[in-house]
Length: 272
Image (cartoon, rainbow, N blue to C red):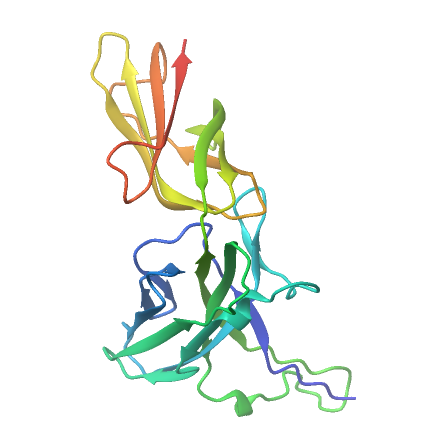
């Protein structure tokens, strides 16, 4: 018996995304889309930064965040509205030569009776191997046992968020504590979310030794908490200035969104 398994999908999604994100040689900008009553359409720029032509298949998939911030694919909702029905996009597949760019257009289509809330789906960009038909038996002795050839397809996902009506979201910081992991100082805490929308922003940790100057020791950009989670666990590796140890001082942690002039949430941890 001969079985060929020509395709293995591996969706590699970062817990948080930056202004640009890549799958292989593909760059997508922006890496987060919000569609609402004011912004009903958006254009994404796809760029091939590699040295060879690549083909990418684009689909909508459902993703969920776990308590540690990981993102994984889940089935479509069994009941209620499927968020994927609210989003239209084109094209669905592109081939990019080295250095070439392509515009991807998205549009939201809301039904008249859409309840207030936040609806989220992810655009998945899959890099398609040049020749899927070129799979061959991996066993030298044909006809004996199973012959399986796996061709991995790498995927990049970005969130597409549709917002309807009056929404609120408030971030918070809780349970701050430090620990040692792999000979590094680490700050662990919970990033909390209150309200009926997701939170998204940047984290910054500073440390002020007693009788010393405050210095930035860690930053994380584009950190989100998606409903229905009300909190996620976060760890930040701390990079202390030369000659400074994590002792006898104050550690300050802040969370700030891109449209805020001041942090939305702050927390202090006194280090003995």
